[in-house]
Image (cartoon, rainbow, N blue to C red; front, side, top):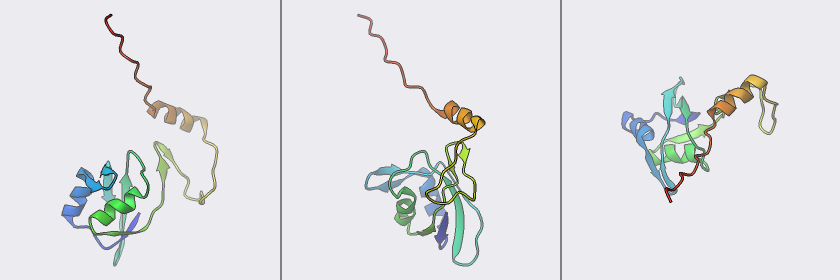
Amino acid sequence: MRVLGEPTPEAMELLKTGVELEDGIARFNRIFEAGGEGANRWYNVTLSEGRNREVRRMFEAVGVQVSRLMRVRYGPVQLPPGLKRGLWRELELPEVTLLLKTLTPPKKPEKSGT
């Protein structure tokens, strides 16, 4: 993602620990600077979930405007750089296997002692 300006160290810490949004607390699992010059800075961020416009709202909450977002992966599956908006490709078998390994099986209900 690209932002206009540079978040303060305090803002970066808040983005990692949790920002209060109208639909609850949101935080990045991972965030690190990925370069940039002048007014623009690039960051790589990772979320566990993807609520509506969550990345933009999180940065707005700390006073920074997001100017560009690019999804680069879903879970463990890297998206090819040339995959344009609205297009898709079938997953290769190793990708499907990796994706299935990341899924958590539903918890079984505990049996009562009666």
